[in-house]
Amino acid sequence: MLNYIWLGLMAIAIVVGGASGKISQVTKAAFDYSGTAVEIALGLVGIMALWLGIMRIAEEAGMVRALARLVRPIARRLFPDVPPDHPAMGAMVLNIAANWLGLGNAATPLGLKAMEELQKLNPEKETATNAMVMFLALNTASITLIPATMIAIRAQLGSSNPTEIIGTTIFASTCATVAAVLATRFLEYAQLQASERKSRLLGLGKAILTIFALVLLLAILKWAGVLSLLFGWLTADLFRRVISFVSDWAIPSLLFAIPVAAAARRVRVYEVFVEGAKEGFQIAIRIIPFLVAILVAIGMFRGSGAMDLFVRIVSPLTNLIGMPAEVLPAALMRPLSGSGTLGIVTELMKTHGPDSFIGRLASTIYGCTETTFYVIAVYFGSIQVKKTRHAVPAGLVGDCAGILGALFICRVMFGK
Image (tube, rainbow, N blue to C red):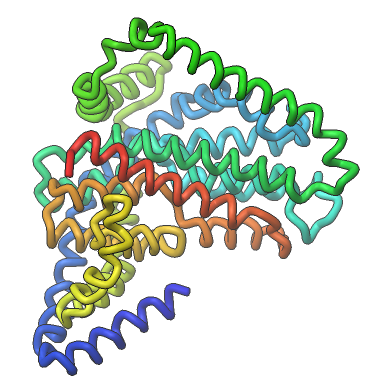
């Protein structure tokens, strides 16, 4: 898919540039943005090395496993078909915990191991089980506590407060996760046979009655003025200040707490940090070709005037939900390609500024969603599952919820 998108951007840029007399701008943009891509990637080295070094300390100190133990009770309810003591459960819980901490390099092998173990429980080897689909939903719409890559790029592009998107990313990624889980459960129930539906109808009825009772209780409490009495102190300004506090203090707190806790457990923090930091340089160098490819294509697309034309066409639609049309390409690309979205978001921040509303919204969108099609292809491909059932729709529901959650929280926090 990305092949066609990349080729389409290049072709449209040349055609539109030639027709509008801006072919020289197209050429200039190609050379300018190729240099920009390398500058940005090299600028990531320091921050990526810092974060990966700290996260390696957290791994060595057993903090990832501790987080996994906290998640385990929830995981048992999400995966009722998987025995609690099965190796698949342990691998899934560790994968989820690693994803929350932004440990992509550690999360992927754990995820592949989890899929391998889940396949052992699968009676139909070419068809995804309910547990597999739920696990993929939690990977394609994972809660993100620290969007390290976006923080690094925002810092490289001169943001006055690169970490201000931590709070907005946590909020939006939580929206994505909840929506993906609910969509998975709903689609799972819709695909059941009539006899199976009847057997689960009682449990579903209890859940619906519980939700209805909660909604009714909230309505009564609001009518009686109890909610205002209890939560009247939670003003919009206080909400913004809480999110800002989380964003400002998350990194300093982790930089202090993780090494100190690890040292208390006799981890050789300096040596472990250096080993983890080495990966930061490797990752930064590895993304240069991807950034060059997508930034050059987008730069040519913008230089030709095609981007302005696209924005004018989609503005009436995006205005309905209050989203700047310039951000739509990033939102559409996110399920398809992480490197492609990274290029688009980087170009948006370079053009509009990392501290603009567009820059903050694009940063949050990148941090709160995942490359749905890539994750599904890699995880299911690793165990030769061909029938993915409702994994793609559930993942896309999570993506949409994350994008809408990002738009909502960014409008509350940063205004527009």
